[in-house]
Length: 122
Image 1 (tube, one colour):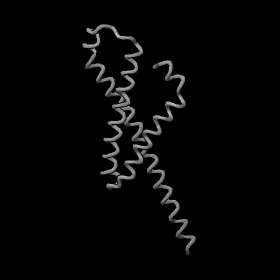
Image 2 (cartoon, one colour):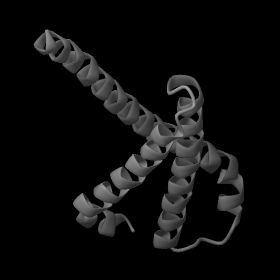
Image 3 (tube, helix red, strand yellow):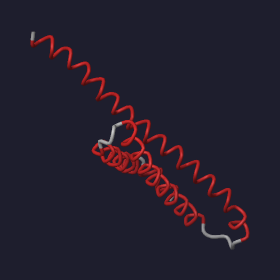
Image 4 (cartoon, helix red, strand yellow):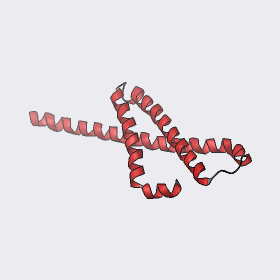
């Protein structure tokens, strides 16, 4: 009898873990996509000012754009974590904290693995 309970409980737990991992990945990539869109929108709105200004060094502009996108990413990550915590995870804020930590880990991992490409850009 106990074997049936364990075998019945295991797939349910596995599905919950896979659902959580899927939600984390979708949330992170949604934030990356939306932060890129916000960056493009910001650049479109500031295009007139940037053309009228004196030309600044390209590296400085690229760093500024990169930092702006990271700022947008973390703001959106906080918003998505709050929305997920309230509506998907029924107020369990530990999952929201985990999502934020996973987002930070994801960005750091991308920095470490793509360090050479990042040095070319920045």
